[in-house]
Picture 1: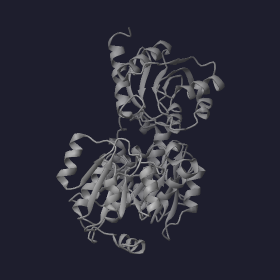
Picture 2 (picture 1 turned 90 degrees about the horizontal axis):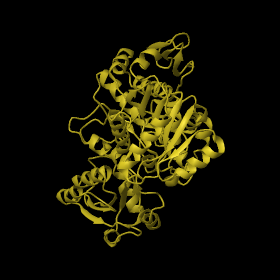
Picture 3 (picture 1 turned 180 degrees about the horizontal axis):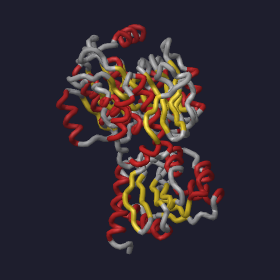
Length: 496
């Protein structure tokens, strides 16, 4: 098929009920995302070849069971022969593959279109009837909390809703749920947005923007451009962060559906189309008929703090979630009910223990400098455990901004040098200790002992690494679990 014919065919594939039969597709990656892609395409009648660098034995077996082919290549520095011989009409790529990966460079040179799982899901969203609307959420930090909050509010409002996407439930699994949904709250990483073109969400938000994943995107500008795609073709509400001008610029420059509104959120007094805080009260001044003179009261910062939801960045995430839920018609009483039962995810500013006046907090999910900055901002007098894979991000601004809060710092991970130099330059007075152990089971016990020796009554020992975890741990959950276990063992052993 020539390129014009291929383009015409792919352009026609906009529904589950389109003719996908015989379409030759290469699927890159065999994690949760890759398997959901392969499973979906085989169900549609496509010919599917999965190419992966690694896979669990169970996944390998399942690929054969569903009727797809598989090539495992640990190096994958060139397209495998089987993929070249397939002459794929489409590649669907998992987020782990950088745009400059050899297979993707080959695809570009060969003129093979590349989609992500979100692009595929958007086209297939009508499988079980009337498609669910999508509320799209991205940002450098706070995505998962905001997605979970929004979904909880929607369910409290009587809607059938689900969180999905980058949050852990593949979106292709959500759109194939036989019961169907009224609305999906979709967490979108910059990787996923990079390869998404057709999506037209009901409402969308970019929570914030800071340097992250520069090793994947190549530059901050490319990273920001990927995040900005979340607003493209938005139909009802483009929600942005009033304290982050870049998110407002994204909205101003986005090509949206006519009639879509710009809705701001922030911790200050709300404007006419905003959600904000007045005298400790969270208020909606966007979705009320008389927004020029009145605002609807949602809850108070005090009430949120009593439930462990009072950190400034958590309050901001709550306001963003309220904006998304309100755009879909959820009433204030339902939102209050949702907030009364909501709990933060594990590894997100999670108290582990308090002993001898010292509080131990697990924020292992603070995998970049922006998230760690928010976490550090929630406490005073901190012994900070930091480090891991920095992903090309400059940590000096973070160290400079938060040094005044620090009683001491304990460095872990492989990228300690950049953090060490930042402290030498901007905070030489802060006592600094390094964990040189490389064995995973020794990292956190050592870090906890060092931190405990520096902590005084009233201090917080905070794990907020400002870095990814894969240098020494399987993922951030594993890192957080290791920290919590080490704290409990240390305290249970009397601190010896």
